Image (tube, rainbow, N blue to C red):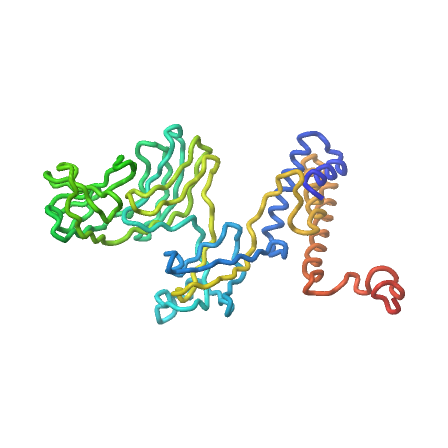
Length: 402
């Protein structure tokens, strides 16, 4: 039975047929369906996903961290083509004498990590970018920086200057060498720009050579060198209007930003986490209709893989709300128990406590039957209920003579 059929049957059985009763019955079915899905590891709730893990092309995989597809709500089992991966609590790996976190090789075990949105790696950080029409709209972001510090920021969108997601404090440095006139030296981040004895590197957001982005700009009072095609040069002397010397640039610590979640209201435009520096990778984007970022379950495999490997994950699938009239419950045979639970709630709402108790007793009995059917009436367990088959005990199918 689909949602519309169940609502009609519930209202007819209880005698509560008004529009508000139908809305209540529909809500009760959704709530109980959600609860039923989460209360057990139903076979209908299992899903298998395959993940191609290549540490060469993905920095997360190189660190042994695997972001799983959004369909995964809970991890049940993990294996490769060669073997099953043993599961252990993350704390177990802190109680081992040797440093398991630094080991590399073929994965043989895994631990569950907290879910998140994505991990960003670059030179500086990310910045919130939004449409001017959304100025003043509330937004909330939760992230961790390279030092492990966790930040929760709730603020109002502003297209002119969005919130920056950076290390705190910023400790990055830039080493410039190679006969670049006025550029040689080590530059340390001071909170606003990279300062050194020879001048300073600044980070400027504007249009340059047809591209509007964040750029590194060096200025020492005489020369202004700005990144043209990327962070590593070449640099153009904007004062003289000619190409300047191409320095050798070495950056210090790369920034790692782990974005856990971002929340917003429906907006007129997309809201993005853009790199603060031209050439750094992009972050995530919430479309105008999105109100929250995706949540991806994560696992950490041990050792960290050094070559491409296929990972198979058996998982409990994320719940799909029962909110469309033609939609049926995903757990096979659960509609009878759901209807009984919804009748209980509708009767209790109407003050019929005796009838409500009868309905909940029926619901619990149907739920127990459903669990027994789930346990023994599946393809892997060839048992028919009743044991002697259907029909006559002697002449029916499965009987002594039939």
